[in-house]
Length: 460
Image 1 (cartoon, one colour):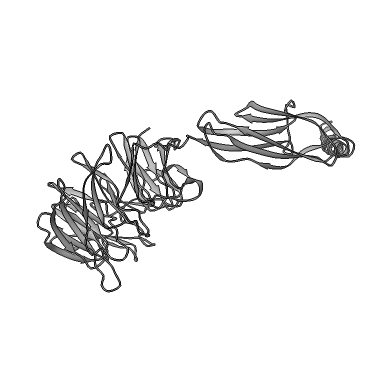
Image 2 (cartoon, rainbow, N blue to C red):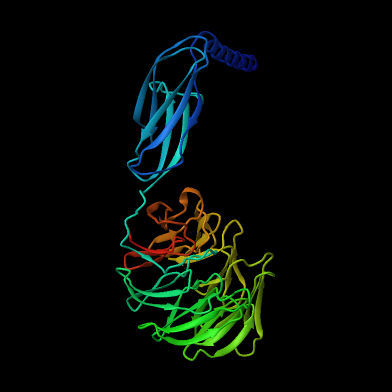
């Protein structure tokens, strides 16, 4: 008996499939058959701003269609509906909806033909996910022009920094500024000399015992050479100047010494401006410890500061793109490798992380590049990623991370993201692309754009 029943099941199932297929064929032959022949559904929109959803609906059956509705559905709720008063066989009609999303975050959007039906096949329903972002903030606290000229190059001047209640920033020209941090009013400016054909002050300034330190370009057709300046932070007077062999692209301060990076590394006494030592290649100082970086061969080494003896080597199977970053007793390389600072042994490795620019907050590592990643700094596990490309390092502080994208509809803006969820909290809009990190201080956001202006926004 069981065998006979089993023998009947397969033929019955086949018959049901055939019957269903025949019904569908009959529908298309003897009835109207409404389908989407084309749709335009955006994937990123701004809250409280009209966004258009377009659809072309075709009657592919052999009979005329009567009256039917087309609906736009947001997270399961019908928000807009249009009635079409019939559609002749073989004809098409275009339908457009303009919808303002009332809340930010992820929305599931459906376009549905004949929305009174409870079920819809793929031809009568289109679905996509929409990321609704806040409206860009364009009202600035102040906007300051950084000098008369602004030269074309890869970077947009230095990162602005607050020291002793004043704001300091270098331009993509020959000027270094001290400004009122609340109004942008100019306190003093210093014009550097011999800055080359395309002058610029790109390194983030550092401060020590009342002085401000920065580096400049200096290359020209006749000779090459950059400069390191030490100015009195209060009045802008020159304390000392040191000439280097090529443009200075970054500087740092460690153990009373200035480290200036060109194609070589200059170690300069911060108070006197006298050269202590010059290294070929990149040498990083961190709390009195020295590390050498061989970018091409992918090797990071710790050396004895006195003898230069190599204490350990860490070799990658690829080149090192950016300068390694120190955090909580560990060294992070291009966002993909984490090694112990003392022993040079591998803590974790995650080559799925794409990017080179690194910053930290609350044991989270943020890595920017073609995409943006949030990573557990202790384990290397990716917590979230976002399709935002950057050429400047992100800035993370107080549970928020700020990133300045460089492509498509993202550019000319600073995005403020929630560190835990990646949700967009605010967007700050400027006049041109941004290639240097923003600076966040006491409820204000400062950023330099390629239009030559320093922008100051109120933190949201």
